[in-house]
Length: 314
Ligand SMILES: NCc1[nH]cc(CCC(=O)O)c1CC(=O)O
Image (cartoon, rainbow, N blue to C red):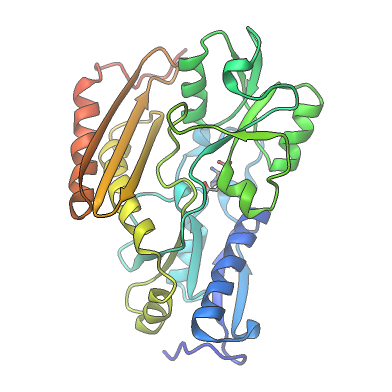
């Protein structure tokens, strides 16, 4: 199949329809336009509704976790309805369908979480017994671990919805990824970045990956021009770490790889869902060993966890 993009046969970019997802698709398109000197109409952005977008009334983990935002989009790729798919790598399962591959990552955004509050500057400044809204298993467990006095409530919806909830006093604070706020140009809201030493981010937070059909060499060549090698190396380590933990448990998992020259520093943390215990570890080594370091670190954390570690709190 000839996939040279031209106005008659534009490259079809599949994405979720959320404002953030569309911003990410546009960033991908803009990078492809610049890298290949192509006009805007050589591309078509195709929004696709996923199960995760349809279900707004329940915590996502109740209906199946990772994969909820990607299945319909991967089906569209396999059915050749789209040519590439743009994803928040944080929401991606560690394994892709046989005929698909992700080997293109855009330069990573800020990996940190943002503490968002109209009354307070940081988690440690929240008054005793304050209410924090979050539906992220990881953030909830990390908050409960650091501040057992805090009362957690479920919090979903887009940034606007969450800010309205804060204004209505439903909670005094919430957390969002800095990456999303930056990509939406919403860095002026009442928020402060949280150091990764205080709250280790989710694996792949801030990273955008572009998925394609394995046998589509034309697209592979186009994507190679916008691939960010450093992000790719970070994600190789982080996703190897996650793959070792993911299949074995439904637990809050955090992980971050940082590069310094040819060296990679990988940190990981697993937290009991009720926050009563956290296990952390790290590895430093040559970046070429990233995936092995990831698996190793995961095994170390698992070996320290007691049998009931991953049991959901009552
Ligand atoms: N789970 C939802 C999700 N997936 C990716 C991002 C933000 C962008 C990113 O981390 O790349 C978010 C929202 C959030 O956590 O605030």
